[in-house]
Image (cartoon, rainbow over all chains, first blue to last red; front, side, top):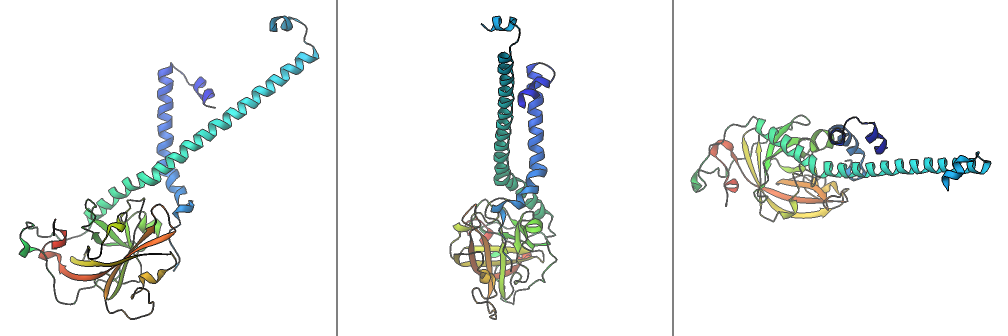
Amino acid sequence: MYGWLWHRLPGPVVVRALILTLAAFAVLAACFLWLFPAVAPFMPFNETTVGE
Amino acid sequence: MAGTTMTEAPTRRSQRREGRGRARNTAYGIVGVVGELLITLGILLFAFLVWQLWWTDVEGNRAQAEIVRELPFEPVPTQAPDEAGAAAGPVVAEPPVMAEPEHATTFATIQVPRWVGEPERPVSQGTDRATVLDVLGVGHYEGTAMPGGLGNFSLAGHRTTYAKPFNRVAELQVGDPIVLRTTDNVWYVYRVTSTEIVLPSEIGVIAPVPGRPGEQPTERLITLTTCHPMFSARERFIVHGVLDYWAPTADGIPAELLGGA
């Protein structure tokens, strides 16, 4: 999967590594901003309130 | 050896071997992709932990500091810590009690001198996570007394994650001050009277008379509730306190908040 991606990317090794680093950072940023806040309420350890 | 077989006309046997080789390559390819997916999943799970345990604190602290900064407080006259006479002192009259505000409205701040280094935290109406505890910090149980009121002024806050306002609750000792400052510009200084660990279902701890639901309150109490043990929601850590005194913020800063008092 990643090997396939690596061969598809243009440019020399340095440019490819830079592109992949930026892509990884973008994925991580998207997770922090949208994915993780969205899934956190469904995590079992986050059920802290009791009905009154 | 391989070269010689290649030059020969393909026999049924070599064809079969070639097919088997291709199948093996495909199998290796699938295993490789599955492996890479699992590694990626592991990294994402680790990233989620980093987000939950660290980033929610970073964001929460920033947001709560902003909320406190924007509260419509009147400026408090400052005085040197050694000018004991100028500090806000007890007022003998009945404490003023504000009406319960709208859900998710920030109406006060809380400061605990024992938690050296902790900032002034906002206190907002309501205790559900999505609108109050995760985003505004400390929440006030709806229907319980307001600061200074007869009964039990009850608060909830995270022990870990989301800026963890009650992270250091276990450090509190009997007699420690808990200082509230309302948007009506009044200080309320409570003193810790006891701590206990209960099950989440024991909601009697926030009754007007703790542990005796239905009884008429005669005291002005405060109760802090948070999760216990840390990083778990199995039990609740409870701190009870009683109102020591109140003072208008125009009188200055309470001695409890002036270092070393």
